Image (cartoon, rainbow, N blue to C red; front, side):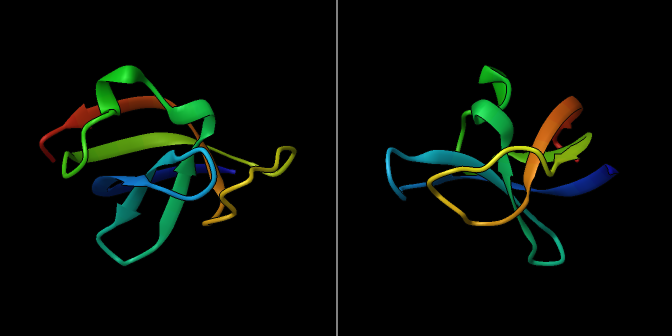
Length: 75
């Protein structure tokens, strides 16, 4: 499923740790394979476009897994 969300990047300390985006609506998406290195900054405001991956699982289990296709910082 394609998706476009706006929110804040957070580092979640569950298991080995993972990167996530918490949307302005309060939804949490885990970034697939940690997402692009440019998004590895807690508190970063971004707009992300991507695909929700239903075919993968994670140890963190914090929400749907989002594979980032493109992003804009500061939105």
